[in-house]
Image (cartoon, rainbow, N blue to C red; front, side, top):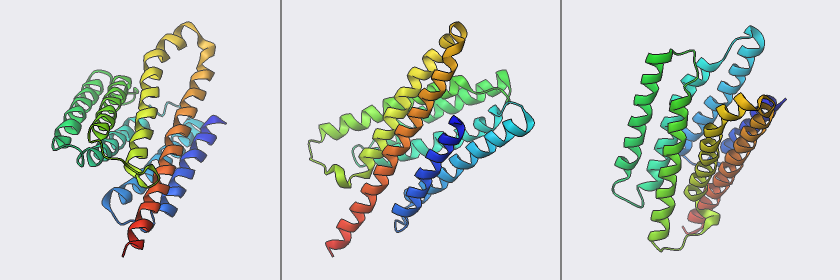
Length: 219
C-alpha cells in the first residue's frame, strides 16, 4: 500500500510540473519534467517487477540513481551559479566522488546489489552543497521574495530530503539488524521524506509560475 501511495505522490508532482511549468521553456524546467517521468516510471516498473517476478528490483534503482545524481547536481549548479563563480567546482567534485564510489561498488558487488554506499555518499554531498547555497544566499544580504523564488524552494526540498536520507542511511542497517520490526517504521519514514520533497517541489513550481506572471506584467 505504501508503494502505491508513494507512486501517487510522485505522479502528483509530475502533474504539477506539467501544469505550472507548461509555459516555461527554460532547459531546467524541461529537464525537471523529464526527470519526474523517469521517477514515476522507475517506481512503477520496480513495483511491477517485484510483484511479477518476485525478485529484487535493486538493479532498476541502481540505474535510476545515475539520473538522480545528475539531475540534482545540475539543479544545485544552476542555483549556485548566481551566487558564486565556483559553482561548477562545488557541484562537479562531489559528482566525481559519487561516480567513483558507484563504479567501485559495481566492481566489488555487481549490479544486482543495491549501491548503498554510493547512495549514502550522494545524500551527504547534496546536503553539503545545499547548505553552501543557503550560506551564500544569506551572505549576499539581498532580500528575496519567497513567493516568486523557485530556486530557494527547490533547494530547500533537496536539503530536507537528503538530510533525512542521510540519517535514514546511517541507522537503517542498525535498526533492521537489531530491531526487525522497525522495518515498517523505516518504510513510513521514507514515505514521509518523499512527501516532503515533492510537496516542496510542487510549491517551487507554483513560485516559478508566479515569477513568470510577474515578469509578463512588467511588459
